[in-house]
Length: 198
Image (cartoon, rainbow, N blue to C red; front, top):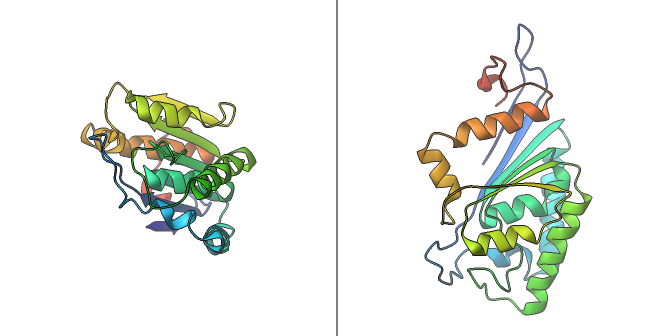
């Protein structure tokens, strides 16, 4: 889902914003899950370019673009990060040859997806925030990303469901708000109505 808005003066934010979000799934029980839709960007060579161009039609209208995703949604957020100014990726899957789910695609196709992700992250000018728990699998996936392009935060949680955990602790929305405001050069400590951003 996505949303955008703009507002006027009196302490409100006048810049238009766009929030592009995607949700994915990965079994925290460490089992294979081929139903995660990972092959959307890897089976057909034309798919990635098609979606890239289609998303860019909308993102180029806005000065500030936030892409947010969980698991394979996080993977998509990284894949399209050159179209964003900020990215929040919860437990992204980068190397699907070793990921906790195994989509029905060849090693070469999954390798190409990984190459596309890394190329996109290296190209992106966005502030990219990756959040994982202490589960070794997710840590290994995050380590595949270039350290100089990604801010990686690790939570004391041995699970893939970091976003759900943060929401249960009432920490998810403040995290998103802080990233959005920082991308606009606004301190999260200021009294800004988030509705004016969204």
